[in-house]
Image 1 (cartoon, rainbow, N blue to C red):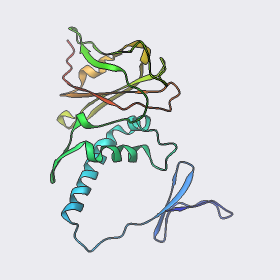
Image 2: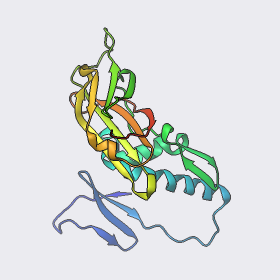
Image 3: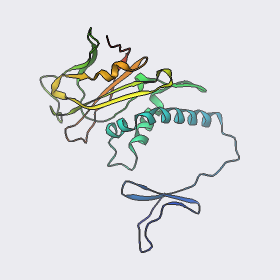
Image 4: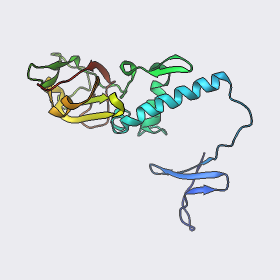
Length: 218
């Protein structure tokens, strides 16, 4: 990888001989083009590539969630790459070639901020949905009542993937978030995750999988 500092000739990007030049954040980067190999990949290589492709495709649906959930501003890595690295070994199960992503094991955020206690999804008789949690009397250092609650609802039923990401419904101090009716119209099983982001937007908590539900508006 090469760093390019623009000079009198100005900036360039794209392919230059065997190098691909691109911009990432405030840097101009270059990397060599991958060449074709005449060797057949080993079974282990196939397994690793299959795992990588599977989790990469899965997480690509959560790109905006991952941007909030993985703070990598101080690291030379993108938020998506950090998420793929985190979930590569833990969220993919099964034996090659029968691999699959376990939704309950997927971590959509990772950080040091303390989570809330006992977050629970509740459905009322009229179909209204809430997410409720408990705040202890004594909070851990770094916790703020104005930390924002982030909720993710995802369904992949009938090949019509649906994702609802909410980052402004509630604060830590509220103890409850009222979910919009939109979620009731999701098809099939709906997976729910929750995480928090510090009041200054810099520190996420680890995400927590709240379960899978079938929401029906009455």
